[in-house]
Each structure stands twice: as C-alpha cells, then as structure tokens.
Image: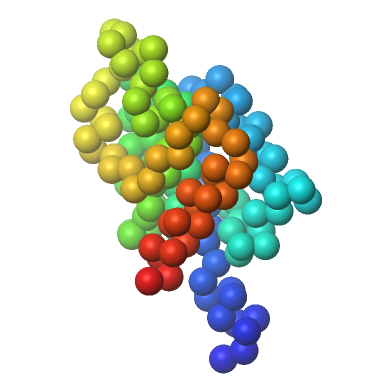
Amino acid sequence: MSWYTKKLAKSIWVFHVSASPCNNCDIEILDLLTPKYDLERFGIKLVGSIRHADVLLVTGILNKKVAPRVKYIYEQAPKPIFVVGVGSCPASGTVFKGGYNYPSKVLSEISFDIYIPGCPPKPEAMIEGIMKLVEVLNA
C-alpha cells in the first residue's frame, strides 16, 4: 500500500452542527479551512452529510428546541461516531445552564468524546484537540 493510499485510509470526515451558537466558534472553525491553518493537511475534511461523517462537531447551546434535532442527527450517523464539543457552550452550558430552556437530559443521551474549551476557542486549540482525536482513532 502506497503512502497516498495510507493517508486516505486514515482521513477523518467531519460534519458540523450549529446548535444555536453565537457564531464565534463557527467563524473560528472556518479559519481552520483557510491557508493559514489548512486543516486538510491532516486529512480532515468537512462533509455535507452526517451519513458520511466520522466525527460530529457541535457548537452552541443544546437547548430544548435544538436538542431533539441534534439527537436525530446523532442517531443517523454511522457508528462509531465521535462527538466533539467546540467551545464552552456544549461543555458546560455557560450562563444558560440554570435556565428554563436548558435540558440536562439530552446531554446524557449524546456522549461527547472531546471538549475543546474556550469562548471561542482559538484555531490552535481546535487543531490540538483534533490531533488528540486522530491519535485515539489511529491507535
């Protein structure tokens, strides 16, 4: 098997879900695709369908309106699927945690594998988190 075939066999396809974010994390994710950071050099590609994805990337608050839709997308994903929470919102709920619109039940139904902290996280932090996921997947 050639080097090129090995590289393609270990590439990661990512599907991004914006679960009611403030769009700061989304802008930082778009920065990863620019030539400055070039996330595709690691074999990581954003795809348009969850059915082709290896990783589900979630940004924003999983509130009562969005959480069932994210769960539906999660259930459509081929297994095993790795779920990455980007920013402080999916990890802790931030200021919305005690609110009437924040369901804690959904977080137990969708298990996050990695959280990338920050509000918004820097592209370097996202690359570091994704590389840790790559190490886990390639082990």
